[in-house]
Amino acid sequence: ASPSNMLVLCDCWSSDKRPVPSNTRHIATQLFNVQPQAEPWFTVEQEYTIFKDGKPLGWPSASARSFGGPTTQLGFPGPQGPYYCSVGSDVNFGREIAEAHLRACLVAGVK
View 1 (tube, rainbow, N blue to C red):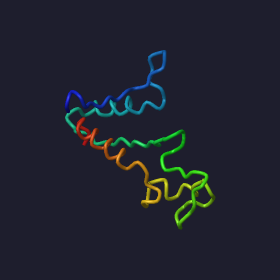
View 2: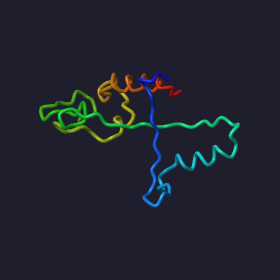
View 3: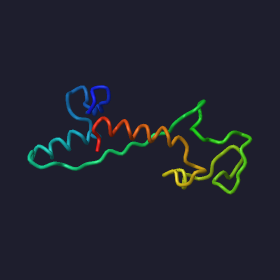
């Protein structure tokens, strides 16, 4: 990893110095320490919403029209379905930002 590209992972602890219930990194560390010679495999899932001008990127304006895509009412997208995994070019917004995030993670050593 480059010194200018690093990934910081944090634990969450309560004021009484106990890991909060959702602190799964603490639980994982305990498990990994049982067999330090083993190389654990785990994953991190990152979900985010990109905003522009106070609305999610790609959110239709009041004058939006549906051209067969998921927009069901002027200015409002349809149900979550195709948006969840950005299936289709008509609901995939900000891909260049997501790909820049991926490249930054790879440079930081995330594999």
